[in-house]
Length: 380
Image (cartoon, rainbow, N blue to C red):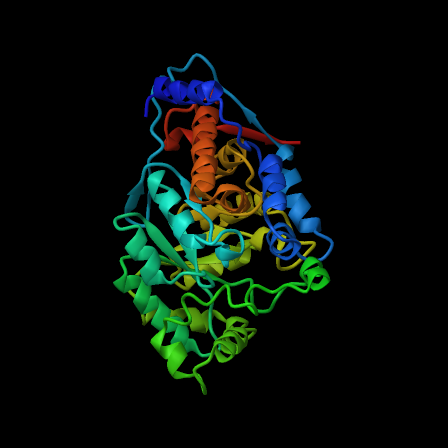
């Protein structure tokens, strides 16, 4: 898209007389007004004293873009090729589960909005809607699947087969959820979306999962999900075994240590998502943006490195891309958009995010994704 077109879109927003939330804080406030305390607290909060949650956001301000000028930025090419697929821009929908606690249309609304603005959609294992329902609602759009390992590993293998059959392009194995993080807000509100059945879309439709139940009841489904989803024995050998059950590329999400990134390459992993789970698992860990450069250096271009956690606006995404991320995943902002306005709310968030990202790239004097890797970013 030309930057003249981007300017037209921006001016169109300024001339739009419809009032709607724009920045993250406004979106969060709209969601607070729309949701009950339990669902709102579950989405908003993170682990422990939320040190990591706060660092994820504040650490972006330590990085400053040093722009170049007198470069012809009348056109911008944000295309990026990842694992054999070319995407029109480097922005993805992060895997966020139990979307139905925010809006009845849940993941269906998010996937449709993602398809409209060409955001590859990473579906969570604990979605309120199934793999097949999402695929049917968004034919032809780019989709990845975030896999939670199961204590019964045959369930994990079954889900891998299902996403491949449904036309998904990659599997993202989350490795930082071997047990539930210490979530004080959920304890305070006595709220667990999994216990209330919001995350069963993929489980209740999985033949291996259902066949393993001792009884076919809602209570049995929920109990079995809780038994399967946390997996403290997960290790590299399991990932090697997963490879035998799918031909799709496998990325691992949750890597923060450079030595783990090097191990991932040794084990034949196809990509990494640098993430601390939005601060929702272990409190007190390094901010994702501070971990990014070390992972990029360790990988040294051999596999794609995506980024997740703490991204609140387009300029954050640009900083992550300049620090070496291949693409950037958007999480909580779209969930607040969903809570505030359903699919239309998500669309507004994604449209604004995409426009701000493109404007920020161009104002930095960059014309394509190759040049963004040479952008000067200083820390201090």
